[in-house]
Image (cartoon, rainbow, N blue to C red; front, side, top):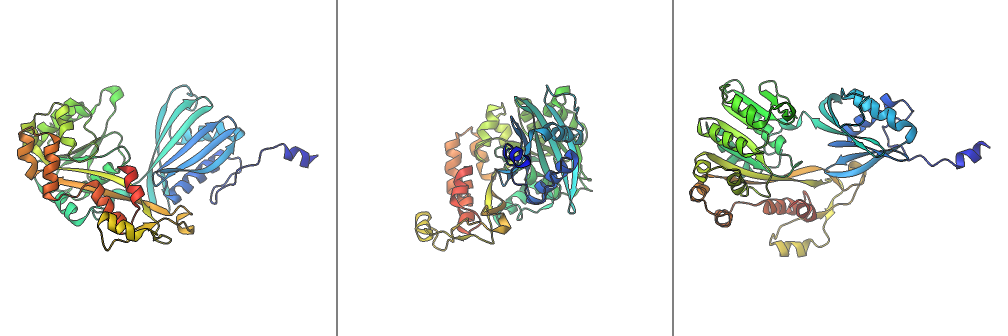
Length: 399
């Protein structure tokens, strides 16, 4: 009879190694988080379904299934997650945000938790922020030597604007915080405005934006200019008022670092014009614009030379290129990729300032970039692919 009853039950999905499933929501939740940290996941998704709860990890920018739990454990596990993040477990009708901390194998993670009601219960997403990431130098973050030198030169000045562009999740915050590490924290006053604060530093004042209570980027930046700062990091230039205040800060002796959502570095200039910044003011304050993307890094243990390497060399005119392809092995958990690599476009503004002041269209800016031989995102990505660090398909996927 027992065998007959068991035959009516659905088979339980295999449990990944390191994830303990014993019905205790606290232990299960803790095991999932530690597995995510061990595998290098940037996000953990708890997705409620009609018949249970699906747990997926975002690894190197792509989603991978990790675990499926029965419906009987769904609510208890989600409640445990809300308690862990300091949220109200009785409120299931409205979205909530929370935060927590995790220590795993000598590393410290800040966790950002978010819930959202769905038809089968609350969806819970947790972002893991490795606090060791911003400690890397520019070369470790993928900047070419000439790009790193240009960035250091822009940061060495006493005042001006430095803009880093790219889509959400392209590593802009990590790069900007790595730049903050290059400053003399004792000799300069450094203040950041962020939404949210992802990486915490002892020698820097950090303010978290809270738009619900009126603490916007513009309101915070206006107040910050009365705090006698030397270096300001504005997490995102979202509106015309923030853009105008950033320009004002740069023109009054402050070094301002910020981000924009544009397709490439030069697109930041027309974007700022659209936000109401006058061309002559932009030319007077801009020091550098840059763009970046994240591509998946080939596993060094199992990558193989691309079968069409000779053809790719000829097509892209790189005679000594070593284009590779993913294979998969235990080291990369059969994915063929391990970690991510940043590709960059870094443009010092000096030679572009006359065109910017003359309100030249973007086509003229692009033409000057080509004459100056500045490497674009595609060209930098192609060099990385030719070195066997990633694949051409991965570069094309993010551009």
